[in-house]
Image (tube, rainbow, N blue to C red; front, side, top):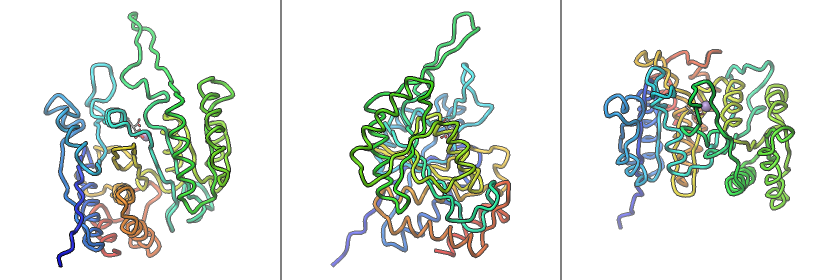
Length: 355
Ligand code: IPM
Ligand code: MN
């Protein structure tokens, strides 16, 4: 009797700058894991980002967005190029807002984990001591103003508005507590806000406390964002899950990245109730493009997050373990600036061999 092999359709956006190189490396890893675990992946490529904007006048066409909705998951490289800008001065190729709001991907999940032998910007920190996850609200907060800010007709003033809604806060806080349950960690959720100064954040914190009541097995904790910035440097080992507003989450996830070898090893999942996309959290680094030096690990780890989302937990664990072992055995060596000693191809091969 023939057994049906499940095949996942993955929409791939290679993106700009180093995007195509690192996504190709990560797709090879995903393909190998799929072969080993006995399932199929059907990669479909789509043009989107700054390159697409230059070619077609649109960073993301309606047809592409419609196709992305048909896939089981979206695998995305970094998009955007600093010199490709809209008339309002913002970057034309950035897709974050379009995809996150367009597909209602309200969770931005970013694991911050120090791997063995990785140089941390913090002195005396060892693998295992930094292991927390950012649950960044992804559809509102200050970035609700993306593309909607007001510039005074005088040209002498501009405003952006921070929006916190009950529904948006409830669902992200619930996700954070569920994530704390799933994780084999400290079972703690830290709400990061600025409720000592702003009403919007007092509202956020109040909802956090309400939702926390439903999770007696998880310790709720609250912290102001400035104090959190310090604590992430001085005592990163206290954190398990952080839940926060969009802008704060954007900033603190890069700060966290710096403590674990840089954002070159940090992946992010953008998840909603129906759709999701997975990406390295770093940018397109156009200066590095084509040199073969780009670090593909964030993209590879993003592939792991995607497999987890697809319910392929064993396959996801294989990727994570391969990265861990490669660092432990020093077949991959990360330099203090976040680049690897050997380059894109060699890092991908080290992971493929490890698998
Ligand atoms: C991120 C990025 C994006 C964001 C930019 C590139 C639009 O910084 O994903 O963290 O603002 O969220
Ligand atoms: Mn960012």
